[in-house]
Length: 300
Image (cartoon, rainbow, N blue to C red; front, side, top):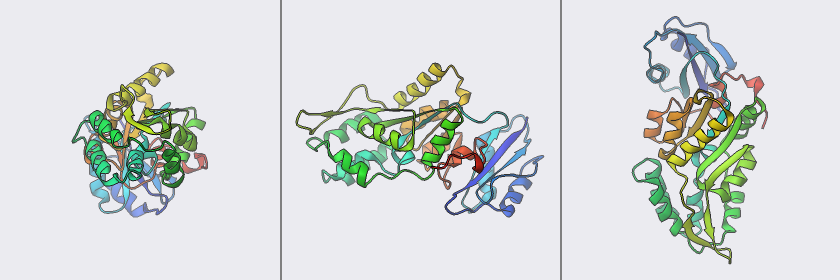
């Protein structure tokens, strides 16, 4: 049985060089010559570690070999790696912000709400009651604040559009799924280019003010997993053909169930459980780990 190690750095500051690749290759059994996917940014090495090897352990081993260099390492079995379904978290994954924290800023409560968000994303408190508590604090805000947040505060994560549009070009279905709100997911999905989006609904009064309630049932950890399973069944594919990405505890179930579950700049518990983790690269890292070369990317 053979495996492939993909080494990836951030395109904004390329850090992968021949010296790092030599160190990595020497540490792997029966390793072949590295193949550049994008010079200075991403390369892969095919090797044969043995039948009982653990991909997470091998990835951890490579990270130790790489040391302080800002290079990510992902190990997988060789074979078809390009996925047919991609399901992605929104907040702090496909965008750089937590939308509910930005809404709370308009109520003068950002620090308080952000602290609850952080604890929920770390898995220290249950997601559903934490969301109800935070939404209640937004009562009375005009719904027009959503447009202000999108226009003035939301930034797409580098590589987001390239990732989604490249996968779509090569036949994958893409879905943005969020424990946040459809008022954001619809707009952000369009900005990035997703096929579909799912999220929670915010109650809005007739006068256009937020009611401080969220629609039930809340889309949280189990809802994200249900989305993955629903789309897999609709497409008639196995879970091995799926990839998901997220950063928080409510992403864990879909990350663990996916054929390739990726922790992106994630909370410690998520990074420890995911099949792959990206700490340095941008979102195009998810293309390199599927074996895409830079010249196959769709320009964003």
